[in-house]
Amino acid sequence: MTDRVKIPDLLRICLAQSGYLKANFSDNSVLLLNPSGHAFIVNKDGHQTRQLTEFTISKYIPLVSVALKFRNMVLDTPFFSRPLLRFCDTFTLGYPISSVLWPANARDALDLGLVTIHEDGGIGLEAEDRFARATLRFHRRQVAVCFPLLVSSSGIIEPNPSFDRMSNSVGGSSGLNDPRAPLPRPPGKEGGGPISLSSPQYVYTWHTHVFSVSDPNAHRWAPAVRVLLELALLNSTSPPIPDTCHFQAKIPPLLPALSPASVSSDPCPRATAAEGRVSVLPVSLETTKPSADAYLLHPAKDMTNRSNSEASTNPPTSSSSWWLDPSTLLFPSDDVILFEWTPEATLQFLPLSREVESCLHEDESILVSSRHGAFLEHFFLGDLEGGERRGKE
Image (tube, rainbow, N blue to C red; front, side, top):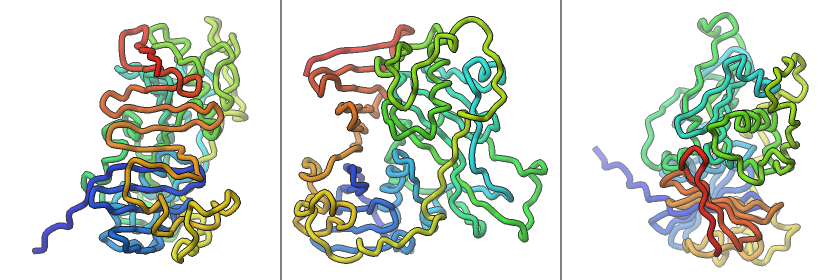
């Protein structure tokens, strides 16, 4: 019996504005994932291996899996390659789920029993059709949405949930990929009976997208976030909403300011129209069958020699490029890093405000910069008034 191949520790992940992802591992190997997730390069000791994700060989599956797990968690365009799906829990339905319906306001959500208040002060909200759940974290800075993601419609994929520590290293300690409770498996249209092999089959996996309430790219989930913020304002024991999400027109651009009527004590009329309450679910890019991005499999110019217009067409594959450098201390000179993962924290740069949010994995608290890094605010799990430390950097 052969010994199991030792999997290196994950040291750092950087996700750039151009869409490229770089992952550093403890054996000095570097994995570079292209913007769509369809192709990757592994660089170790100066030797480069280029592959399409669909045909990932077994020795690289753990490395590619952890890179894709982080990419999918923070981006709105998830990608699941068929060889990697055996590490996911999947379920098959005889019908597609293309969207979910959220309650119109906080009053409706409470009346329908869709709200859960967690022990740490987080607020959970289920969709009216029970196919998705959104959780506003206790510090009111981040939202995690768990929903069924379509990963295949051509047959059943045999699930294999057993995996090793590598698959749990990203997000596991921080809890960001945990919607606090698993959603129930969606029943069949006729009550959950066996699915006929002759009928269309849609394969799903439960997927969690984590985003900042200050991120304008999360507009897909705006109906859920609006209701969550209303609930936070209605909850007298809830920690205060951070300044960027305050009731008085300080809510980020993706969320319009809440009307005073939405938090008054008067009962709100039950909305019956679905307009403004529907979130269209994304599907895995693998199911859309885009081009293979074969350009990543061939040498190209150094990342540092590219112009901005070339950033999306010429991948960083030169051995002198930062993107293939095993160092974990530097940053690229011609691209902006939007997300950085380390064992201690996950950092996000918000281009519109030019500020940084850092989620500390040890206690799930958040450090937020203000005035372009001149000040730091620390939002942590404290008393009912909410904890906050301010420091000048």
